[in-house]
Amino acid sequence: MTEPNKTSEDPMTEPSDPHRRRPAWLQVVLALLVLAAGIAVLTLFLKYRKSPERAEQEVAPPLVQVATLTAGDVQMEVQGYGTVSPKVQVQIIPEVAGRVVFVHSELKAGGIIPAHERIIQIDPCDYELAVRQSEATVAEAQVRLDTEIAEAEVARREWRQLHPETEPSSPLVLREPQIQRARAGLESAKAQLAIAELRLLRTQISLPFDVMIANESVDLGQYVGMGQALATAYGIDAFEIEVPLEDADLAWFDIFRAFGGQGGMGDGTARPTAAVEADFAGRAVAWTGHVTRTTGQVDRLSRMVPVVIEVPRPLDTTDGKPPLFPGAFVKVVIAGKTLQDAIAVPRDAIRGQDSVWIVEEGRLRVVSLDIVRTDREFAYITSGLPDGALIVTSALDAVVDGMAVRLPDETEPSQPNEATVPDDASEKGQ
Image (cartoon, rainbow, N blue to C red; front, side):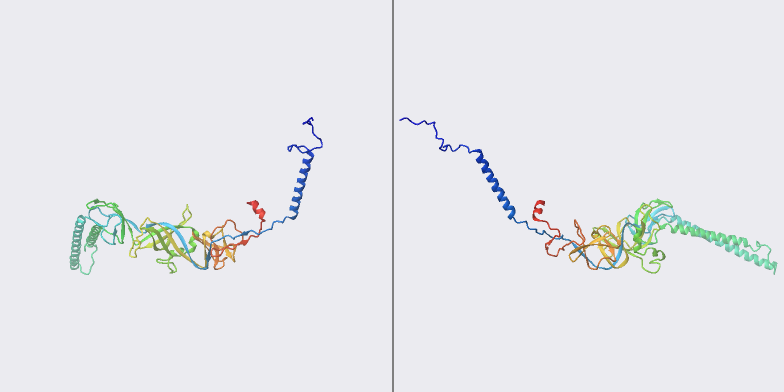
């Protein structure tokens, strides 16, 4: 038997190679079926999908800090700064020349010398001799006058004996010119004696008030000339402070009525008081003074009005305060008029020129004020705010009149914002 031909194939049998490619038309059919199935699934999904629910976004109102403002009588204060200077300052100058034989132990910078106490003594020997000489001249002139008067009396008697019931025709007969000359000589001698005594008195130098020595340039044994400055001293009964103020500040205390009085106003009222404050000797110290006057002019450069404050007994330390020295730079607070039913608003709470934020029933309100006066710390008003108002003292990024706010002592509830945003929109924003 012959073997069949291995290469011959039956056309009716299926191919035995599994990797044999399918026909192209079959692949296209399969792709169309898959695409149709996807479109059907997508159509069903879009038809039966649920729409996203619109939810309100919960936003907490901003937290604000507030202060409660109450109305009351508020005394205005006018503040300024100035330098302490002595009210009375003198130079110690001798009126006679000579050698210094005595110098007060406190004649040195910072020394205090009581009133009428001898400060410097110039050698009085020459002036004592001048007094004695003048006294002798007075005595001699007195004798000359007495002699002329006696001789005139003798001449009068002789005239009456020789010429009774008649008067001499010339005053020389009774020596009247000689008497006048002798009397004038006596007066001149007395004047010379007074000058000598005055010069002797001026060899001792003192002052009629308590002083503190600022500087000195004299030593024991030094020869000083008339008119030579030996020391500088200032009175310690009172010091003064010249404080420049704006003219608007003068309306808050009665300065102009002070021109008519000595210890007070022209109508008898007391002068405005002032607290003088400074950091001295390691602590804050305050002295009490009063307003005395203005300098009577306006500074041409700053347009400020200088007001003078007087501090009595500035070196008194009996109450434990340190002394107030000239040259100290101090703050002055003048007690002014009183505003009735006024509210003091902190300057930090003023928004813009004249507005504040207040809280009413959990809502922020913008209120415009009529400000009467402002200083470095407060703005004062007499109307426009209710008594006990809660004023916002903290800052906010954005403010809308009527917006909801919360206070520190309240819980933090979440209140819905008026504008709602869908969830998907918020996710897109993120």
